[in-house]
Length: 333
Image (cartoon, rainbow, N blue to C red):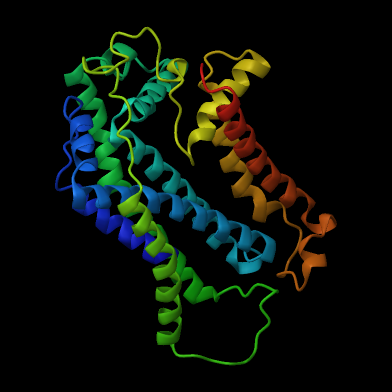
């Protein structure tokens, strides 16, 4: 079902690309107009809400593989490719939010400039806050997000998916211990019908939400004279404009390190969070002492063999939860 959702997401994105122009002076008006036009509104909303479904399916699949130990033995490479897929989905969510180009989308390049500033590259790369407040210069900085979102990242995603399926074919599929083999075989067409059935139910709900739930275009970005934040001395975070899920934890981590550790610039919260979460997922199969897939829940939850693996997975979720909760309770800053 994840594959079907990804295909539909790519198709809807290709349709939207027919109308979108990555121009910092026009992008907000384009998305606002699309949200006010019947069919285009449904297409844009479907693209938006399906991204949440994809993120949820990626997380569910990751937990399924983790608890079933599906990465053990010869399948370690499958897990690492899965980590790459999860990272690519995260980047697609981030670049997609940018292209909406309201004040929330404007926050992404704003925080990117803070990352470059933290490492001393903002002026070298001409990626400063004053650059973002100048429409022609901001357009130059917006175009790479568009290129990554509509071409580079989808190509990378499809390549990783192809590699993932190839390794499954070569190494065999992992059967979770809670699904006992029955010895029954079924034609591939039966699996396809099941996938289509589940997809029709979940994505059908997404279609209904896309049709009947209106979305506000949000406030215009502060570089536009029409924005309520035009001329502001603060960035989006200082104005209380925070990212949407699933990337909202990044702003929360910025607030957390600033509040708990007085760390400035607070963008180090995002940098540290991304590094720790990525490292935690990568090391899981390397620190798991088991050699074969668990046969029951006792083996699956064995801290003697999987203690460090559980610690790494816990670190991933602790950062995600701390960032998300902090973002909700202390959004401004």
